[in-house]
Image (tube, rainbow, N blue to C red; front, side, top):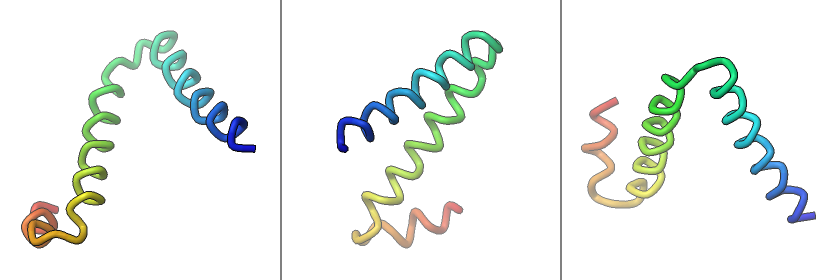
Length: 58
């Protein structure tokens, strides 16, 4: 069942890539990338002493 789950993730990524190619929506790439980096930053710093400073940015 885990193979199906990873296949589904790659399917979503390839479908999104195809959408950006055919519709010429290249501006979506940097937006998605920044959103992923911000969420990763919040998740990784959740338990640290830096968390209060990061949350003040939002």
